[in-house]
Image (cartoon, rainbow, N blue to C red; front, side, top):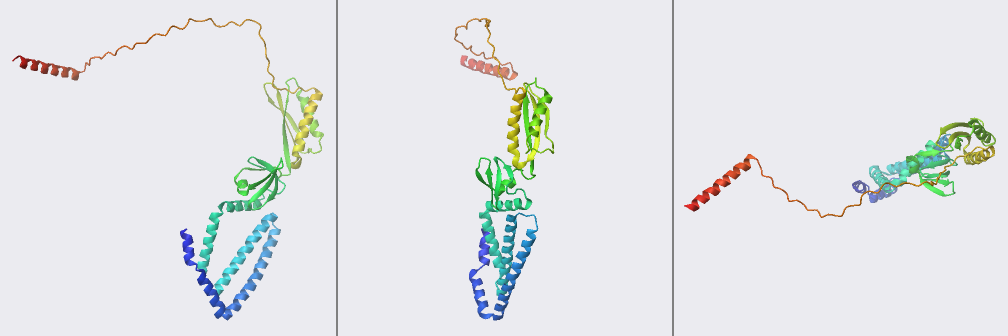
Length: 332
């Protein structure tokens, strides 16, 4: 607040306006200089903007990032041109710069969250964290990126929900991009009974994977016995596919392995509970004695113990002598 008051004191809009009026009514040669700088400045700004645009087009920055950087550069260049023109007129730039700084500070404090999202959007675009069409997971949100701007990123979930996530959430949270590398590994766990032939189970799983044209041959599909559980043996298998085909491959392999297990007689274990009914007599524990009747509890009086300390003995002797002396006086 003090900074804003100082800016208000140093920047007097009436004084600036009077300086401009005085300039255009008295300094004719400076007017020519003013318009010359204005025309040349506009031409220079446009040339610099074109140069920056050309450099951005040759870079790896996304189009949305190029547009943002180009707009920022354009605004900064025009702001510099305006400050130069004000200096030619004779306006005190220290007050103007102080006022501009105060406005920027006030706006920055009011739009702090938006500025955070804006900075995060620049980071996302410049570092190529995600692109349109990528399948990502951020926290509880999983879906396909549909749009990226400098405040929000739009994601379509697998159940066709449109979620607009603040860019700061993507930057500050663990982000999983499933589509950035183009291919994905699909992992499976299949359980079979202990009586099953290990080699036969492996052959079934690999044959199912080999039958689907969306599964890549290199790297080759994999299947090995992994875990010996209490009621089953578990096989770990995986294969590779394009990121867009992940769920097609997952469902195809799962369904067809189950069907091939049934067709080949491979038992699929499941949790079972065995119940046995006993016909023999169950002997109960011997019955104990009955509870006694309630009896009234009588608390014994506390016994006050005589103190055997020497101090107590001395006090007793003194009190005895005093009582004897009083009795002798009464007799006299």
